[in-house]
Image (cartoon, rainbow, N blue to C red; front, top):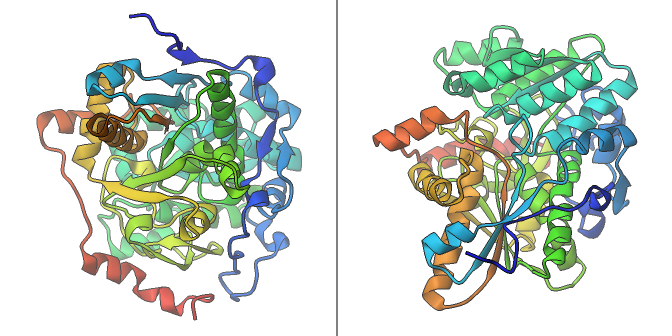
Length: 459
């Protein structure tokens, strides 16, 4: 079949953005971070005791619209960027839809995901600061893989606290991390005080991102010449991921296409924040803009069923307080296979946009429905998607079917930020018909948010 528009559209190396777009320069500021001990405003100096200094400077930068990407980071980016914008012709045909479906594919690197976009600059900042060691958490393992690659490149040691259920479900992902020289510790573990406390409360705990964050932070602040590095949620991470949206917008303009709908999966926020970046800038500046959809798992529905309030970003309650949509830091997500979305809260930036109505819609899907969409996409397009990104695929398919039923020809853009080649247990369970859906009850949700009223900033 001949098409007027190519299947894949690549920017040239010369067209690769050499800046990160800072969405916060164009939006009302979100509520400030608070010190978890005092409830006072968190200062940059306090944050620098946990995070790399340059990351903190970026975290507190609400004014510079464009931030130059350092040369050493650009050199690494050129190994795998620009990433392709792809037209899903085969999926369109399978759905018999007049919609034109595009996806930004971020899986063309060894980490298999978009996470490398933030891992590289954060490792570079650590090296420039003279640090020797980093700690982090990882859910599905994509962030841990990406940071292990970046740490190896810049000659840094790395300890990765991997959510225990993911470490068990994805042993090969764990081994990639180890191949790049990092140490992997299943969380909750007996190597930290917080881990031992959580294991004492529940010896069979499968862990969560909030728990792994607590352990990694404790490790960082009690170890010499070490800082903690985060792969989602915080403002500077979304800043780095904005390169996805910048590239997507440039590539769509080359095709003379403008998306009517932009979709991203939502766990902590890096996927969604990346793809919407410069399109959301248009909306904030009063220009025509797409309809934005955030998609999350029904088992961990922070946007669709959570509360907008100050909360701890981790289970151990040692991180700064952030105002965000949350299920409560003590909420224990079910062991779904989309490990990267098993987080109790949401990026403060995205939470503010959603609360203000700039992020148009949030929806959730059950795990089995997500894998139905993933299988349809894989059969049509020939790429096996990660469970996380498959949430965005499910929404794109739903919107394309609406177009078929209405006869409208809309342009749909979604973010495919990961491959599913290390998620074969999940696909096996789906194919065997043993995949289980987990949906928290209203009582579960109420119990998770019950303590929010006692947190500084909510009183």
